[in-house]
Amino acid sequence: MSNQDKGFFGHPMGLSTLFATEMWERFSYYGMRALLVLFLTAELATGGFGLDREAAFTIYGIFTGLVYVTPLLGGVLADKVLGQRMTIYIGGLTMAVGQFLLSAAAIGGDAMETRQFWFYAGLGVLILGNGFFKPNISTMVGDLYDNNDPRKDGGFTIFYMGINLGAFLSPFVAGYLGEQISWEYGYLASGLGMLIGVVWFLVRSEKTLGRIGLPPKADESRTKLNAVDWTKVGIYTAVLVFGVIGFMQGWNALSEGAQSTIPKVVGAIGGIYLTISIVRGVESKEQWARVAVILILAFFNIFFWVGFEQAGTTFNLFAADNTNRMIGSFEIPASWFQAINAIFIVLLAPVFSILWLKLDKLKLNPKTPFKFGWGMLLLAVGAAVMAVADGISNGGESMQLVSPLWLTAVYLIFTMGELCISPIGLSMVTKLAPPKLVSTLMGVWMFSFAAGNMGASQMEKFSASVEASIGQPVNVFWFVAVITGVASVLLFILSPWLSKMMKGIN
Image 1 (cartoon, rainbow, N blue to C red):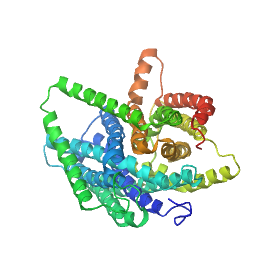
Image 2: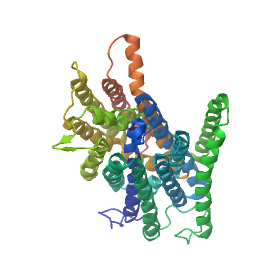
Image 3: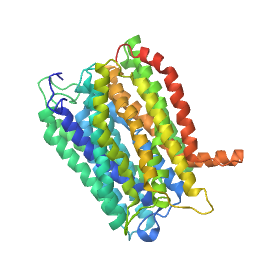
Image 4: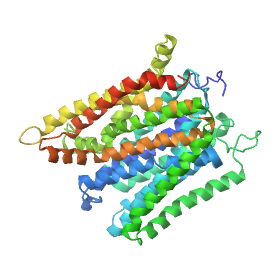
């Protein structure tokens, strides 16, 4: 794209298309996420599943982890076969179906076994749909800019604001409908939000994106999908949806040994294929150095999300059980606290976007690894503040409700850390990845989110096991603060070396 394209607040007009599409997709995802643990732990009489904290956290962790594993599949297919646009349509339509399946599962009256089948089918469909959607829309944002365009980090920060505008709106809409009226309406609203995003992308993409995202071997004169492409979109979507349903029916018939073996075999095959794809796509020592930076920062990204994703588990239940949510006679729904992070993103993202440009003009803009170090340090500070709040709530003979300002302060600190890492990480991948591997390595980057989400769901259980082994109380939030604090120190030590490995890309 041309550096002269400044139609959207100084950025390419295509950013407006991707901004709004991602906003509605995140409205869909975060609406569902705000409800998930609350729904799983709600009593059967209220339409929930009546699970304990550990079981609910485990399901949450597996789901949010796998959501970030499948982008490896979507990234490879986009790079090799489909292109980004087709995968976005496939992913968006598939996710909408997944939300509608969750809505069906939340309707009471059916036998619990039937409800659970459709619930897990809905999660499975969402996982695959997200894998097609998530890495490719981020890749298209990168394609709007040249690698050393100083607007690129700012563009990703604006794009990230769109993500969180959707995340801000969804708890108020889907969260309220689910908690206060009936669970199925919350999931239904999430599904409708995803469909709005697909329609927006359809209307705007041909006008603002040019050739960006078309299939790899598309004719040079094309700027839109043709009838064959749309047929493939329909076929892939149907295969994903019915494939998950069929898989679940067959899965229940397998022995426990087969159920434990199949994921390992699939994972091994996928790992081998991914390794071969990367080896074939890297063409020089310079590219290998840049790929190494992506992989090293992806490793540290795991620790960031182990801490940050406490928002959907321990923070969510802390809001429900330990926070004074009364304003006069009105009780704030616990799911609404999930919107605080998004509010701060929307408010602070423009500030950070301007900050990076101002620092760049002064030649003071930190290199990407240093930004990661600051983000990790802020997360450690936020976790420590949360540990203090938890100590106040549970430190006496009986639990006392704490001010909602504690959670608000923690989310503010976490948000500043997030803005130093998450949009910068997306931008970094598009800058450093070899041209043939952009979506593939975006999938690898998303895999680090998967590991972080899975780790986040087990932190309470892990800290309890450490407490049992040493015979001393271990607060999960202090545990997170120490882990991320150590990671931030290591990042600052490694940052000069990592910056050199980026080979001139800032």
